[in-house]
Length: 78
Image 1 (tube, rainbow, N blue to C red):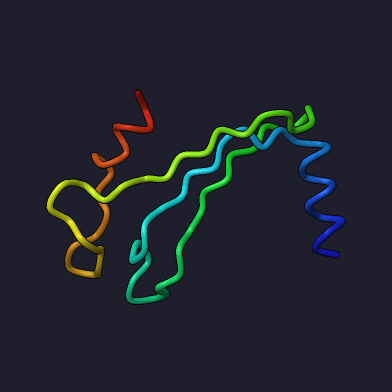
Image 2 (cartoon, rainbow, N blue to C red):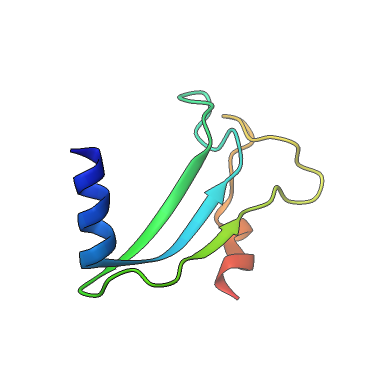
């Protein structure tokens, strides 16, 4: 089922962007790395833009008291 779902998504939708978030974004709930996938329905996937979101200067990890802030996404929006 997993293979068929991936095939369907990549042929019926354009996976145009993958943003890799750093560890700790969802701490304390989970410590696994997270990717955000952006799809546009209607066209197959041809090219994928991949971006690894860095920690801001001076930050070594995220946690419940020091979460990721919306302003940190300015690099992706430019």
